[in-house]
Image (cartoon, rainbow, N blue to C red; front, side, top):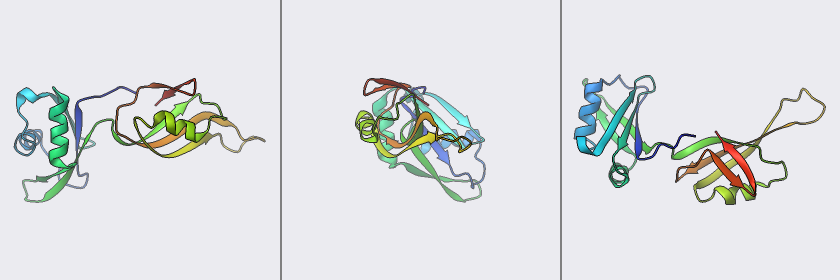
Length: 165
């Protein structure tokens, strides 16, 4: 996983009218009160209606997250209001695949190892389809967790190095 730090995503409502790049820039300036010197770059993903904002420093990013309480409103040209979800990229609820962990490794061990980066909500082993006589593990655990810190693409759990995707 690429570690994207000091970046937030502003997720505009998929069911609301499209928003122009100009209106996005004005909204960022007027609603989030960001100045040019505080922002490295803005990336607009029109298809997903996401706007990624890369900050120059983490304290300013945290201040925006605190001030907005994870959401703001956007007023469209037609007067319609829509919600914009605001969160740090890479954090929040995520579904990850952890590869190369042995069957014997207990879920509680995995929870302890990943506890510093977030709260695990569910762990599911990935199993091959029932086309064979015996159940076959794909040697992958699918973990749903709420991340509070960024996680590296490789983590050591009970001495086993696992790839996270």
